Image (cartoon, rainbow, N blue to C red):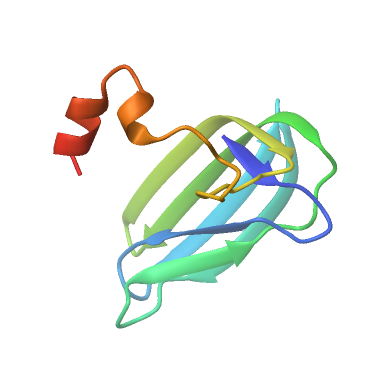
Length: 111
């Protein structure tokens, strides 16, 4: 996974149990690079943290740990890199149409 590097921090969010504490930890090897703590909000049941801006590089591990009473749930994402993330959409200069790809009829039937 690639997350946007500096100048803005990458946003990480998820769903959880309202009132639970969520700790997001960014590690490289055995070293903890940063740790952010938030809580799950009602009524959306969501949580969100903004990581500090990072220089390009990696790999890192992102760990999100939700704690509520004796309940503890951890999710880990390995091989996280920081760099430039580009989102592209159908611009007028994009000449290839869906009908030109090798599995066009399957792609069109899946829409």
